[in-house]
Image (tube, rainbow, N blue to C red; front, side):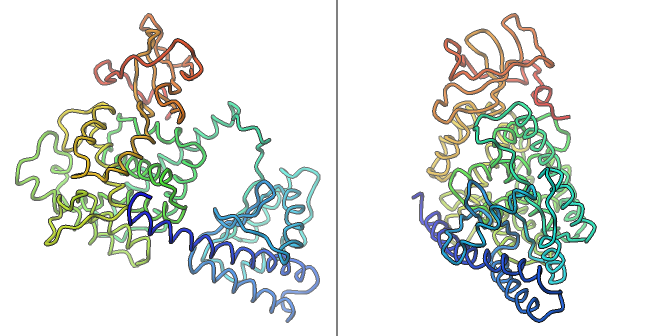
Length: 488
């Protein structure tokens, strides 16, 4: 275990897993029974009313702990959100029914939002109980989706049946689809941050719901393929650095949290704090925030106020819950060092929270490798890591930094490298079992000719005789990483 904070999180995670398992085993037969009763009685019949009431109570109990849930199947197992339900005898009949019924509808389950009202749930139950599956599950799925829209059932979603054949090797089309989703989510997150910071700048309330939603999408992309979203954090050809930096820090924090084994709920809370960590800068002069070069003492006096400003900005929202509480802690503490120094200066030094320590690592790494704000010279990834290691124990949590380094690899995704074949490439993916031999997109041949439209990808762990010779400063050679990542 890493430290006391991680132990506490693990204990909470285990308790939450027990809670989800117990309530998932109750929910499954209740849902099945409600479908069956709906097939025999009208909505105003007392038998249905009693059964639907029991189902709503089961949902309410789960919603008290988890605002958005998914009930799904995969590989013959049932999951409530990310937690596998350990079925018992009472669940056997329901499980058999859903395992047979759902694939015919082209689905593997449903998502349910906390704001689901009784009438919406009733409409959903009666729709599903009498919905006829066609010969093609894909067409049935579309027809079912259209009926949900027609009935204005907005807080229940369909989880489409996976088209995965069981082969772990992704097809080119699937890889392209994942990359498209990653790009869409990344730039959507940038827009959300921009809107959120502008609201805060004009004393508006922060839209926590929208922030949570985009964080959930980022988590989905990391689970799908973290390399596809990580490579976007290497792009520096953005004019809106402040917004992109916030998204980059969020992605890096989520990846680190994911590798620490945090569950989805904890990742969501971590991600919201990371995405909003610099919201306090909206209360500072724009000229100061965007000032190039080294700050003088007066500049630093102003800049050190942004964590306090950030907490005040967040609390303008009317939603005060666990997410905003944890986010406020991250905002306040992300410039506190591991030994309790840093800023804001506290009367009694204390170690910052786990989430703040994670965001501190992500924030520092991205700022150093971007070469913007506080840093006159941009650092190459290996230089940034070396600098951070030299400040270990005082500034950064040693164990978290070690996990971060192992996660990012020797050559982080997006690093431009020279190969022993005299070719130049961009690291597109790390091989966890062989960090010295990543997957690389070759962008220039041995004659130094750059190709954008005919980029080839090679896995150095399989390409015998080719290895990374050195890391290249893409600024020095005017290499626009974005040109090779299809970000348009």
